[in-house]
Length: 72
Image (cartoon, rainbow, N blue to C red):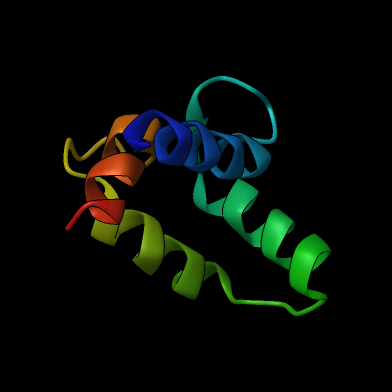
């Protein structure tokens, strides 16, 4: 069951990873939110979310950071 949940989470993450480099930037997050929800968020809002999940301080969210947040 855990594998199914992780696989589903990876698919969600990959949707936000627009360039496929394994990392989600604030710009990628903004772009996908606009596409999926039809709403705009500010760069500051996107940066705030990424920064909240970015545990290694590189300014991007990896799948591992995303997965850790999902399991809090």
